[in-house]
Image (cartoon, rainbow, N blue to C red; front, top):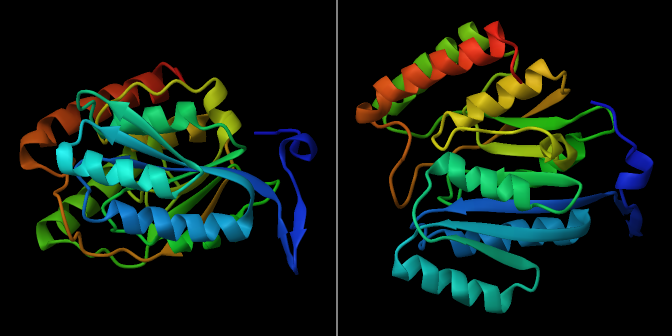
Length: 253
């Protein structure tokens, strides 16, 4: 995708570092009361160093009371923090859509609020970004999950690669830096974790340019996965087939 980067990006000097980009960073939050404060503080430290302008968005996807209290306290401490509240849980995809479509700066970074990724590694994505790149996609150096999730993850990777012809190494790595203008006319439909495949499939069909960076992955310290649940496997497969038909056969992207 081509864009007028001269107009879109702000460039200022900070010592030897040039802060070239304005960045919206967001986290989908669902009962992540034990981890979200640390995630926000870490990403804030990176954005202070690397971003000409920035905001941090927390998408509260119908969390319980304790998480809401934590978010309220964070809002009092971090000036550049915005909180978007879903009164009812909309699912992982619903939370991502709220983040993408409410971001106001030139680049959008997102990762999960459960501390399975280190927000400080956002610096690696920023350093990889350029005028020739639309998406910097992280890929897990090593997956820190129970064995059954590792097995399901590999199966998922091979199925999606076969269906959609992905060239990136890890469509399931929710650690990405994306040009915000992509979402001006990109409509995402899914409210489940399938949204990540939908997003990458549609971006790929539109000719978006990808770069990749290895990132660390950590054991989940609180909460549980809302995606790799055996009860959801059938629906995931059904939705992937529907998505394949729309994107690969009917060329709706």
